[in-house]
Amino acid sequence: RRAPDTVALALAAAQAACVAADSDAADLPSVFASTHGDLAITDAMCATLVDDPGAISPTRFHNSVHNAASGYWTIGNRCMAPTTALSAWRATFAQGLLESLAQLAAGAERILLVAYDGESRGPLARVSPSEGLLAGALVLSSRAGSTSPAYSFELAGSIAPIDSGTDELSRRYAANAMAPMLPLFAMLAAGGDRCAIHAGPRQVLGVRRLP
Image 1 (cartoon, rainbow, N blue to C red):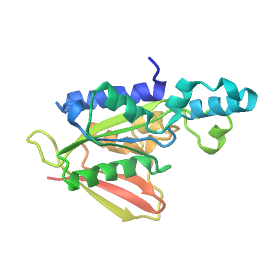
Image 2 (image 1 turned 180 degrees about the vertical axis):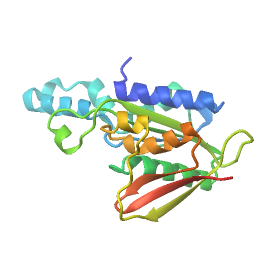
Image 3 (image 1 turned 90 degrees about the vertical axis):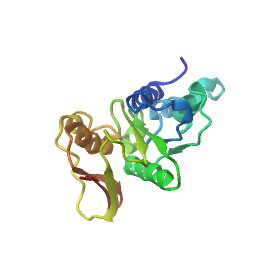
C-alpha cells in the first residue's frame, strides 16, 4: 500500500516475467535498473525541505531511495538471493543487462532483470526529463531451453547515435527515461533477430539471435 507507482509497476513487471518463465521469485537473484528512481518523490521532498523541513514524510523518504523497488521485491517474496540496484543515466538499461549477463557468467543459472522509470516533476524535469510510467522485466538464463531462443551480446564502440526505434512501443514511450530498452522488447515481441541498445558514450550493446 505504501509503494509509489514506479515501484508498483516494476513489481508487476517482475512478477509477470517470473510467471512467464516459470521461475520462483524467492530463489532468483535480481538486478533492478532505473535511470532516476522516483523523481516525483524527490521533487516533493525538496519542496518540503524548503517550506517545512519538519514535515518530511518517513514514507516518502523510505520510497525515495534508489533500491526501494528491489527492497519491496525481496521482502514481499521472502527472497534471500542477491539483488542489485543501479543507474547509469541513458545507458541504464544496457548496463543493467550487462550486469545481469556478468552474474550469469559468474555462475548464476537464472537472474531477473527489471527496468523502470516514472515521470520527472518540478525543476528536476528540466535536467532529468522523463514522462509517463514504463517498466519491463526479463528472466535470463545461462542455459538454452528447448523452447526459448538464445542470444549473443556484444559491447562495441559506436560514433553514430542509436536509432530510438520506429516500432509502436518506441514511438509511444519515447519520452520516458527507460525508452532505450524498447528496441529489445520490440525485437523479442516480433521475433526479430537483432537490435542495438545505447550503452554509454560512444558505446552500443548489440543483441543477435543465434540460429
